[in-house]
Length: 199
Image 1 (cartoon, rainbow, N blue to C red):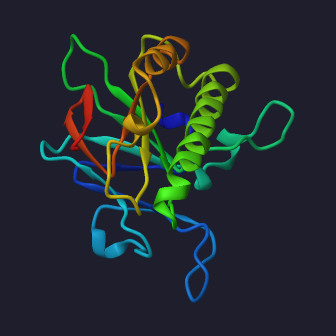
Image 2 (image 1 turned 180 degrees about the vertical axis):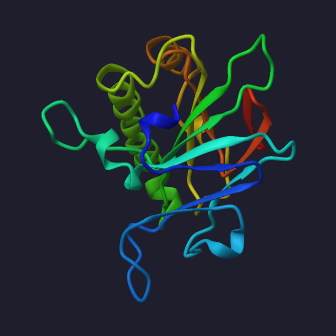
């Protein structure tokens, strides 16, 4: 897997992810921040926190820093998620996990949360298909696949319960290689084969 990414980090601690694409002012107007110390991350909005209490080794690839992965066969860029995280396999008899991470901030929580969730799911679908069908990085049966949707400005996770039925979630699982959606701002690494939202 490492050979697929020109730029990645490996961590065995907690992880923080922030996207300040729409930030105006002194800070950059675009960028995904990934850090192991919350003090090292830009915090216009609270970051997604991936708690790693058992120090599982995780490969983390910032998609902005891996542009070749995001090019389609026609040379055009695909819409990509903020990052992907892949665990080291912890048990011989189980698969490691592979998580696509998408952050959406809602300045008006009541009005925007539904449209942000729709945008997030569309991006996750497209990026998953791109990594599977064009890049061959996602392969059915190789990993437990997770789609993490974080809305840092909302304090009402799990976000998926706001709009998706169980039937819809099952259809995602069937069409996208077993993918499970987690809608939370706090994720816990249970072990090398499982992730959960804390809420």
